[in-house]
Length: 265
Image (cartoon, rainbow, N blue to C red):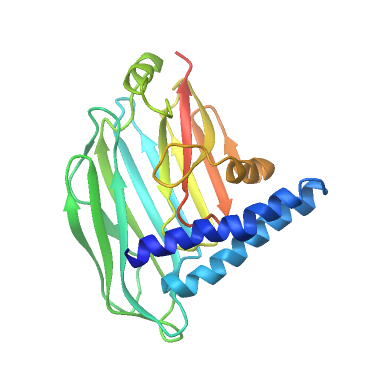
């Protein structure tokens, strides 16, 4: 078993052992107290895992913007990357994927960096095909705990026909699937203080947008984590007529967080 799979399994097991039962025990208490317990248990788990993963990020942002034709641009931002105590980390893996029928990845992703980072940073495209783009961002010389400042970067991926247009097209494409909606999602790979997802459609698009949480790579609902987000109210999920933003404090490593939409016509 790889270190990543072992860590994911540990994260899920740790959630059942500490955070999620704590939420259940707190259901009879006040809502604010129960919510605080859930946030604290997630944060404690993330702090424990950061040392085992070797690095963490203060925030991860995934911004998905669609065109009228269903093409899209995804901007993935990593903020405040730091190595764990005693570690030097030089490679940070990432992945884009598209599952909509007819959807395609358009070429390799593009790395964008803020000015002034002291070490060289470059993107290596490990595998790119029409459905998936795997890459890693490499820091020359690595980031060492206590010696290098936090790193931030953005990776941009263009996609063609990554969103189906219209209620009928979505119903036909996903009629045999467990989850019968189109969505934008991010699989949390490492401990982070916050995950933010943003989705936007062109003005006049007739969609309704909603938050969701999956068990890892499955399309099965994770009810407890979704309820935790819903209890945050607008500070967790906010939406307008053609846009939505999902902010998750201390997301659980190994879960898939998403914004999905249903078409009005």
